[in-house]
Image (cartoon, rainbow, N blue to C red; front, side, top):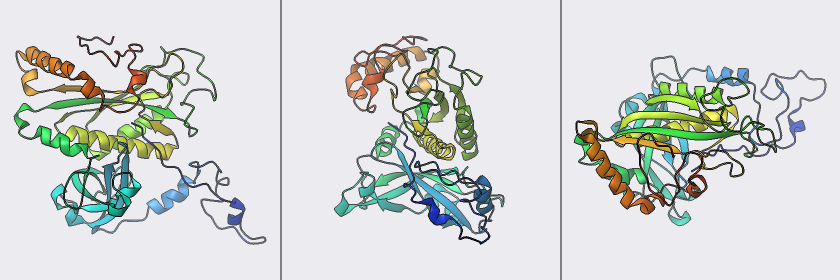
Length: 360
């Protein structure tokens, strides 16, 4: 799965924005900095102009709610609506909404209505306010107007699996790796254009220094945004391949782990939009050369696994996983065959194995 930063449309002739001769140019985002770059996505707007509008106060009886959902490719989409404060005090008070599913590959054009059902509220780190209220991010899942979960709504499947298992207190700890690229989507941060680093893997993992660490500012910004939002983000680190980073979410209980993970991915997208870098979750973004891929290691335990005698329960679960290895790997996303080769700290995609502190 891949996080895709949305591109702006190509900007036309910038001369059309030039002030007329012999007139005083008005202050604007266009003439306070150099003319807009013709490359899509690199708008170079002056932050002082943006901050001027962000400083405008919000009405004290209204909240901006950003509804976020997962599309057919597993990527996050969102749109904003204005709500009375009273409608945002709890998730069950939030209204349902809708979107055009034919534009996200989630519905046909002749029956394109998809319903957004709010599931979880987070504080919005991109629209902070100083009046004691919070704008919000709303994690949603997706249904037909008749109330049936659409095929891409894997949350509904997971929620059903958790039903009746509350006593087991299923904990998840999720280690999300990602790779940061320049906007050409070909050159990872820290790599020379059309080339490779002059040093192999080794010095980049959990590193410091300008020659080793690339993208720390992006990761730190995402970290702080997640903490502000109320996500249980528990850490970050630089990864093995230069330009690769990781953050961890959890421990979280049950379905809330999925809600927090996908909202953290959305926040990562938004932060990368601000920094104008491209971020991907692809398992093997660089296939040539001796470079690690990126995955999401998932740590899971139940209450019985954490109690005395839990190791036997753990082994029973492992044997069940092994018996359905091919069935599981088939739904883990595209591109895993490029990463799971038995090299670079991975097992072969065809083999199931387990061990203690064993990274292969």
